[in-house]
Length: 278
Length: 272
Image 1: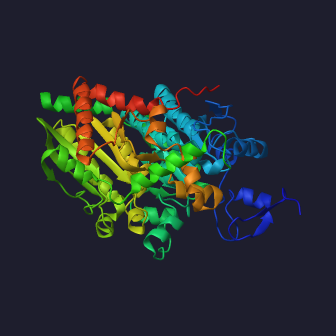
Image 2 (image 1 turned 120 degrees about the horizontal axis):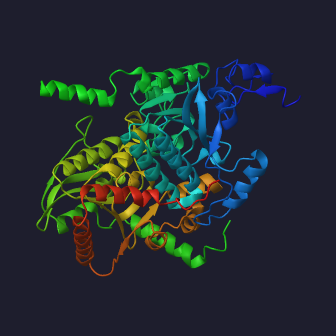
Image 3 (image 1 turned 30 degrees about the vertical axis):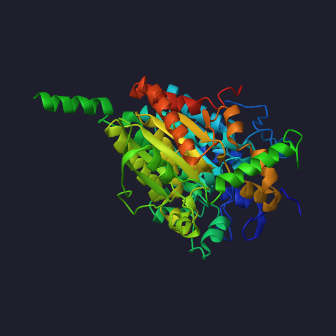
């Protein structure tokens, strides 16, 4: 059986022609499971054809605490999937509307955040502020990268402050939580979006399920730490099916385009002044 | 798995610090608060769902200076430890802390945080109540505060659960405190499927005060020589010095200093 012609669902094992799954946006035709996407597939799905330009390309390897086995692991992934880090950043268009976009890729160490990931995301927000563009982040990450020790923890503070500065400047940040969004990434920029979307069934949470079970010694509720659970408890705005993601993002961008708003911030302040003066 | 850069002595030293930082008889936030502040008034609750007992917070006098104090509390017996969730903070604890930080900002009081936690509380209720969002919100809002924030890691500085009180103008550590992205046990069981390798991993993680000072992640180490009261006196002196330094800066400079402190970690990386 050719691996390229057929596709096996990660969850239920259903095997079908790859083309059919591709047309279905890598959602299983049998059980509806959402396969985790690599960054190329995600960009193809969201960004207008041939409009993506990558920014802040990083070619080195960064090992701040000289952690045993880290470099070997990096080289393995690099040779297997030609991937140098866990996030790709750049600019592109969604239905003709320009955005800055970051896509995390779990093939690189579970999409974990080390110094390079933190720096790329921080620069994405800084570049977006300079160019007055919205930011869209596709999150897929197990959390902070243990192999970079305290330096990876500090990236949580750094990226959160980057969102703060961007937000203070009036920028729109949409974060899309996909499977998985956990640990130090969920506890920093992932949950700081003006609008937080999620894919159906995505695992979203802070602590690992095994740790929770060990700590509390009780059965976990149905749906625990899924996108649906998080929405029920008020922590995400909307669950969007993959096939509707691009059009939903496009509509959100359109609604935030100041050309479509007669009550722009400056105008609004002006009219309030007018009222006070009259 | 052992690399040449981490020596046997370093591993023993790191693990020794882990054990000291976790020792049940170790002094706690409340001991320090009682010793170095006057007129401490504890304030409770996040004004939403509850009051987290792992965080003791309130207002006090530090000599002639009004301050807001926030401390993670553990206790010195099994019963006390259980009462305050072993110092593991829930979302309502982080939100109580943030509420009082904003109150401090309104009244222009410096904020002093004592960190001592194995990590944020891992449990069903904590996830339901948005643990990730609560920590993220603290990181975001603490960066923006226009009064001085000092964070002192007095025991365990466990990951995001510690950082959520640790976005500060100055970060100070006690000599035997630790600060890490992951517990050595957690790291060992994920990487080597064997939590018994924790002592070795503790060495690899470089979680001691000296390592973190060398990395420039923390600013000062307070010696633990002598009696507890002499240690507390040194903590007091250190706060005094830092508050004086911060008094020379205006609100915007304080905020900028705090943001830049974290912005600079990794800014040397070269991109094409």
